[in-house]
Length: 262
Length: 351
Image 1: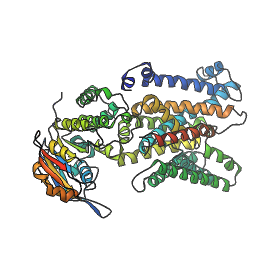
Image 2 (image 1 turned 60 degrees about the vertical axis):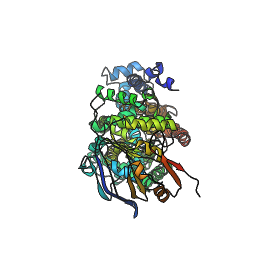
Image 3 (image 1 turned 180 degrees about the horizontal axis):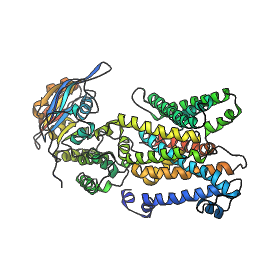
């Protein structure tokens, strides 16, 4: 296997974003050390996906900077940025019947001139990534025909052949069976990349992330280790719910138990 | 299900690009020979071959074959290939398999541009030869930009909005074309309405083949070399960007290139519809959606299809000639309805 690219240090500094006068992100600051897995949590509409899109360059922040290994991401070309940051979207739009292998092969694009074809080395990397996510048997299937979990694995394989230092994942466990959720998150942690995850499930976030960042109405309201961040007071304030939070007897992670609304 | 897809069977051998391209090439040659043989006067295939390959130029048969039918067959192949190529690429650009140069108004825009030149009688002879394709190019690009802008209003593009905008523009432009040709009140202009709005290959001449052929050849080479970024567009705006492609800039460049191809072809063949809708779809069903395989297969398929359509157009009602666009619309309209029905049921088709 080719030497894994080194993980990227991410520093997002005071990111703001607004659309039609409405502030979606208000000076959000987040950082991830090389190789760290950080989770972004918060209620629907709190700006998690918007923030992620600012990090990978789909949106241009109104203020603030995204630094990748200290370099301003806005100054990087689209291609150069894609060599450093790979994205696993929530879902991918219709692809006219492309096969899984063809979808995964797209991950080589940032490393290629646009007219270049994939060579034997690319084919080898594509095979490796497919095997790594357990999607090798799916290679010749049409992407649209896959189940949610299979698609998610194919999209992770695509991100892997991109050889990024930073992986941005937007709710990678959405709509998946619990087994696939655990599989995907476990897999992400073994990749050796810096990972930025948007997650809904607080218990999964607590057990798979090194640090958590909590967004509420576009503002960062807490950050730190899962134990420090996930408190009954904070969840009451941010989500408007009552919880009991203990330490999980087996994993040692914070364990959130939701109580009925009064 | 997975075993069925993973197993390489005889079916997948038949679908391998070299085999498909080989079969289509044979079909293209057969369609060309049929196009040279059949018509108001039936010419024995032997005579046809001795004219084309043996260089026989004198006599009634060789004159018909060489002066009338061969340029028409060549133009048909070039136009068919170009329309199918443009349709395939337009479908990727708007990420919608219902796109087609005709349905998106580009062909009608080109016709309108060309008709303006014809009516105003810009120059004569050589000057018209230059002005006609340029005006058609400008017309097709203006139409495409207008349709795309309208379909994109509000940020998201739905299939319904795209097709409605396209058809509306197409109607307005072909009405405009008819209007200015009628108002010019010259008999030959009025007769030309049918040609500009429905298309036809009857006007093919040797001295007007070079430009469409060169534009098609260069366009095909360029587009096939752009297969990788075209594939990336299929993953959507965010997807393409995160894979290293600036979708806005790339799309703008390719829109210009496709407009040029459509404009130049329409300047010599009128607005022939539905070739660019049906052929890409059929090609995708055979070799898949990856553009490096898809584009050559679509181009060859388009050439074969238009040759056969034109053959029908000039033989079914002989000695009357039906515009080739009527035949393609008769086949393509129902096909479009079938696609529309299907796209509302299957996922991954909607914009």
